[in-house]
Every structure is written in C-alpha cells, then in structure tokens.
Image (spheres, rainbow, N blue to C red):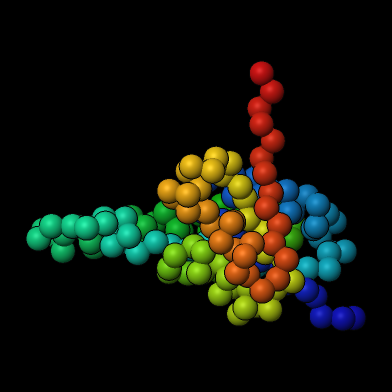
Length: 158
C-alpha cells in the first residue's frame, strides 16, 4: 500500500478551528480506515512576551505566570483535539504543540511533514480586522508549500 499523504490541521482555542477539525474528520476520515491521509493537528503556543507586549520593569515577575497559563491552555487545546479524533476512531493522527507565531508554525509544519494539504478554520474577520490583526489563513494561503483549505463555520440562521 502506498504511503499516506499528510494533512495538517491548524487549531487554536476557537470554535472556528475546532469546527474545521470536526469538518475534516467528517469529510476525510469517515470511515477512518479508508482515509488516504495521516492527520497532524498543530497548535501554535504564543510566547509570553507576545501576550504582554511592551512591559514595564515588573514584567519579569509576570512572565512565569503567563507561561504557565499558556502551557495549560495549549494542553487543553491538544486534549480536546485528541478527544475529537479519538471519538471518530481515527488512529493515524498526532497532535503537536509548537512555540511560535501561528503563521510560521503552520508553514513550518507543512514543510516538516511534507503535507499535501493545510486546513485552517476561518474566524470570519472582515477586511479591516484582517488588516489590523493579521490573518493566519491569509498568510498561509500565500506562503505554505501545499494546498490550503479554509473551512468556514456556517452562519447561524435567525
């Protein structure tokens, strides 16, 4: 049997990224034994300095606390991802937590795993928010060395 292609799914702690993971599991790993993909779920853990921004002289006291919180949050995200793919009986899957900016972490994961596809959830930002905050999916669609799929969560019906 030919070696499976790799699908990287980038997640953060948002409902949008978990929706994208659920969508991938439903459409590409159902049933899991027939999938042509190996699943690699990647979460980018921010550095404490990126959370604090420009800090004053007492920031050194706060950094270890923020680092511990970021580590706990990353662990929760990873456990939730494992729980999702395990509940669908997907065995050919792993979760990685990588320190760094999400844009670079996702593109690096694509290269590291020789991925065929990168899947990201869309936060649904408008043009202004994308310009101010930056968009991981926009960056990756231009810089990742594979196809990029952006999964959008359907809008709630009124």
